[in-house]
Length: 404
Image 1 (spheres, rainbow, N blue to C red):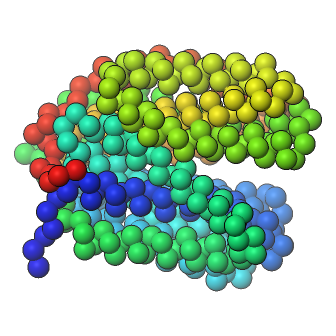
Image 2 (tube, one colour):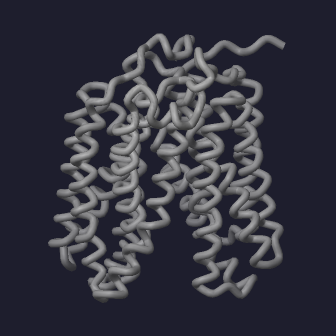
């Protein structure tokens, strides 16, 4: 059977669909947690272990998935990752005890992590020259939209069982895997002119990439910690300011809406402005939003505006870093380099809530978790300015595509 031609538009659509599945699965355990707690008799700490198991799986999956794809081919690993995510999401609906649930969420996390560096690399390699950062950044919006879809389901179908949530989160990636298998070309393994050109060491440090890789990791870690701190502690901050439950819900929702809108917005900006300007806008917006949140007090409109800004600029900065990561590494090791960067981000997502919790335990003031974002953002601003000058790979590295 002949391979389908490479169409940039088709690749982007299938990778976006994969991102939607990932965004859904990242949130489904959190939404199902109250139901799981009742059924399995879980305490707060045990629920935390469930979240942690998925996070560890995602971190390991990103490291392994990107690396294996460079050696075995992107479509093969992407399809396998989606199948793993789908099967173990469905299996999560069938569990009867905590150990089984931890195992299923860890294995689903492996599939989740294995898919992400590959869809980033595929969109980079098939996008028309000059539009790679735009499309990779827009791809980032898929994950917030996937989470928003889950939220819409719970609002429109309040009687939806937790088992059904996992079944939906499992069947969707299986369908996308089927589409990828038949609609994507094989994308055969990459190979360098010399064996060393496919090693991890060459991927991360070869051709003078050691310093840019370190700077990328520092930037990614700082932004990921900041995102995780906001997502996890914003409700506590609003409650500490004496907002009622409805107002807190509205303010938290603006954070999600800001994140969902940012990928397309910053993707469009990246197409029209140079990287230094776009990064400057993103980081200036992050810092301004933090300052606004600190002075908003009990003014709901100001707090909501700050929350939207934090979601918009923090997520936008994170999506821009995906574009930086995929452009930094040559095609032969792009999955490896991107996978390591994604894993650093996932480590930051685990570290963020722990850091905020430690600050809250020490001071008792949730505002200090917001204040702690400032040094992180200032450090990442310094490192991203360096990254904005990183060379873009030669266009000849890109896969020849059909119409977008």
